[in-house]
Length: 216
Image (cartoon, rainbow, N blue to C red; front, side):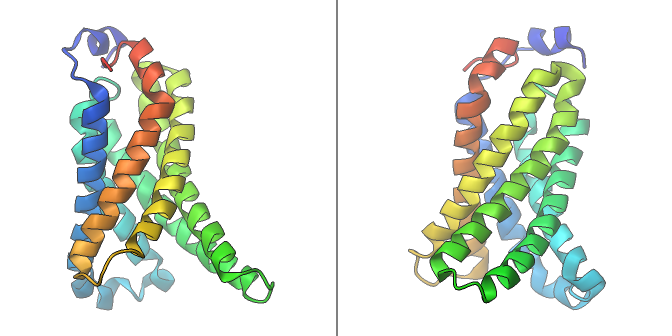
């Protein structure tokens, strides 16, 4: 897909669709995984200390998010690159974030740091690693048609969006009553996706508009 073809394609309004796709994609991904994980746990849970299970979790979310967003970003990057990049980025991010969470939990265990502070650091770090991994993966896809400026900005946008979105959504869950796990996943995913997509748009929206890739 060339830059000329991208800019010549009829374009939707980007911001509302991007936020909606984030809500839908993350909600579907988290809900889908929580609905099928009990059946997969006996097999995946034993492989590589649970890392395969965590990677599959991230890949499931990544598939749903990538598919939900693909109609919006086909003006930025082809689907054949965007969807695999999102799957790979979130699968890698979930594994790295999960291991970092274990390391941070052990580090804070005897440090005397308060529970709320340690939990906040762990949650923000988890979201940051998710965002960095998916941002870097998507940057490679974006470079094919949009060059390096948007690709680099997208890494920052994804890192900030998922860092804040993940941590804030965990806080929102604390306010909810007990719900079935699949519904909890859908609500949590919708919050993560909505917050992350809004912040991503605030960071990259003007640059996207200047590329001519979308009308905001």
